[in-house]
Length: 205
Image (cartoon, rainbow, N blue to C red; front, side, top):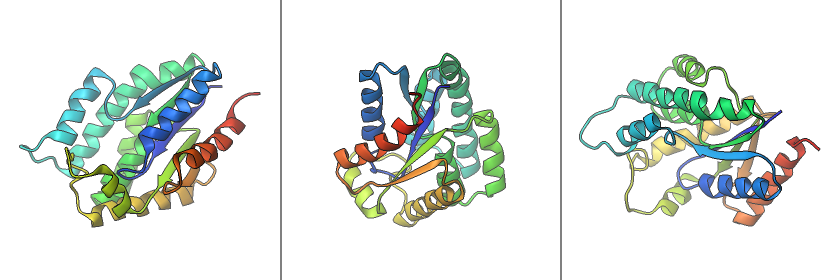
């Protein structure tokens, strides 16, 4: 059975770096694997990304964000994630539905039952086997991102990002068997080692 592994965390926590490292390690072992990310990749997802992240001239409500992210997610599940899993290819995804729960639910303050219901439609019920949370203090993560080319979410207040971080912690506490929480202030090598220790146990012998 192929694994579906997702990476989550706040801005600047190193999700992209660690998801790529895991992808390369599995590839070197000849383990069938693809690396994808939200909300881009598909043709629809790329257009939605431009709207959600870089539109400065239009106001996007929290509810519209929720629906747009899940429209992109539904396409990604249908076009990329599920077909690969069904072929026995492991899937690593940089962000997934938990990002929407934290950013639009905890961050924006949308009704959590609504967020969960819409996410359920967008994912078509597909839940990751393992979700890796790279946890880092908000100030440190934002400092890593720097001041250049900030998107709509990176320019939000530190209070917003702190709500997102607390939201992630709450989600991890409710499903400890699915989540691996890693201190993202450690070295890249240390973090990669912790992740591999968990992932290697899930791989078939």
